[in-house]
Image (cartoon, rainbow, N blue to C red):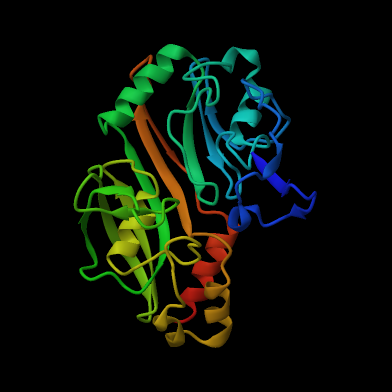
Length: 286
């Protein structure tokens, strides 16, 4: 609800109502228009890797929001899916998130599976809950993990100081486990790593890597200050890494059993051009 200002008894309008509320004040309120209960289909191109009557697998670009939410009422993956699949998708798994089994952050690219029937949705959701699938990500992080491979364990929940962030918590968090492997490093400033999820918590890879001191390059939420290691890079490469406009994270591999036929399915999508360009630039540093 938007508070434009309020009118005092003498008729004066005060804009900073939050700090000027007085007894007897009259508020002028502008309620937002109600959102449509069901998202509408939109003609948004999809990079589809596989599709049958029960599901589809797609490669989501960075910058595309998965489902409608405050601030993103349309132009989302859900709108694109309804536009592609038609009304048959509406309501599967929920009114506002039809077909969505799992999600990727807006600025994370990569593979997702979408259910096209209620039975497929139920079984795929169960597979994700049981961790009966393979999910592997490529990431570019600051610093070089030591040891070169390992397992990060730490319960994740809302940061009690900043509710828009997640954090590793000692109490009231949900169990989270991330396996990582260093593919190559660039001096000691950065590394290309592979991450496999054992659980699927909100921002899990981003939170876990920041927690162990290796935040993702470009992460607008968990990279809180200019990394000291950036000085190890030559200026053009350093500027490219510091100015990278999103978290350098891509869901590269997705494998699961088909929810109806039980046939094993395995998909791989290379990282997008911006990720590869950054990795190539870092590679020139040795």
